[in-house]
Image (cartoon, rainbow over all chains, first blue to last red):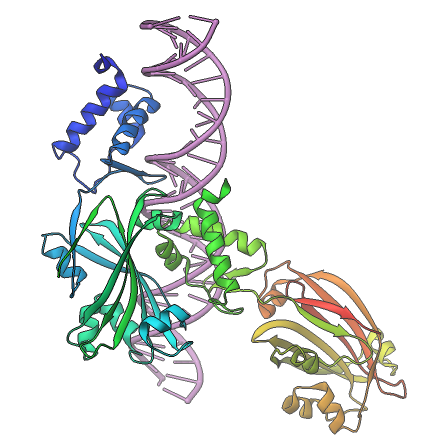
Length: 235
Length: 235
DNA sequence: CTTTACTATACAACTATACAAATTATAATT
DNA sequence: AATTATAATTTGTATAGTTGTATAGTAAAG
């Protein structure tokens, strides 16, 4: 019935291509113009096929950039000791952290409370994105007390790992005091950073890491793309 | 409607950062490349947001250097007694005067007329820039009768203040006889000195300061960057 | 007659890339 | 220490390619 419709045939053909790993996750598809030539149809007919695949979560498009194949869901363990890189590599995936912003400023009340520092003490803010297999999946915003770790940023810029940075600063172990998880919708800036749609559901975790003397080290928030991550809680 | 456009969101985010004093006036913003990473977009999209802020006079950019936060307009009082340093410090800003040129030569006709001296008497020319909170904002060109104040330059080089210099020369008070104000466009030399663009509008004031016996002391011209200064007339 | 599938065209928003021009940071040299 | 040469960084500009959106039109099906 439907199968004689052109856009549906294109949809099936592209879906098969993805299933056959002709286009792997993270890859760009040929442009809509190329595809329309390949199938001998108008660009809009291709777009109609692509639209179904986008709705199914198989593809994702970005204006000016192209259409890319979405990744399947990844498990991310959350427990006493959460280490981003280890978490990812344990599942045979490749993590990559990029700093997108850093600034020094006075602590807000909430930040000061969570870090157990004086209100208006100076803090360091570091915002990073985390790519998994080259697919942007995580945004982290860290608040770190500047008084205790004045050279944190400098080291972190080289190490790109909190675990390594803290080790170099003499903190060999740290644990999570708590983790709160809520769902949020991506705003346009988050959507751009995470290669997801505006209003895509995000998992937002808020937590404090502290050393073994229970002194807070960082107060942070991490956003995960809901479609690509599944959080797993451990005790 | 427009608010879903990426460049507009970035524009709003940056405007908020400036309003929140995350970037203070006179500060450099992170480079366009940094910002494009922070927002997860192409550099041109950031540039589009920056362009709006430049048009609004909130930012200005300098090729090879960066994008800088404009200072808000400063009120500069003009009346019987105009004192640069006092004018600026009264508004809790920091002035700084730098001599860029000085020379001795014969007076032109206009200069002689305004100073009520003989044509071709020798005069001293001093050209200075005035920074306000470290932002160059003022150029002043002073013509001073050398016969009456032969050691003016020597003292002024130390004091960098006409008021102080004249006091040391025995003139305890002086007033303006008149002030003319016109608008001019910045040429390349002025633009360089004032850190503004060529053809930026400048306020040019021409005036004579005289002692209480109505004898002219200086015949001078001052250029203000229109974007940064608002002249206020008093009686 | 209306709806649906498809074509055709045009423009806006955004990306990608490359290079020029101006400035700043760094190294080398005197 | 100061000057000079070299490299790296930053903004300005140009060009081409990609997706998003809007409008109009044609042909076939119900």
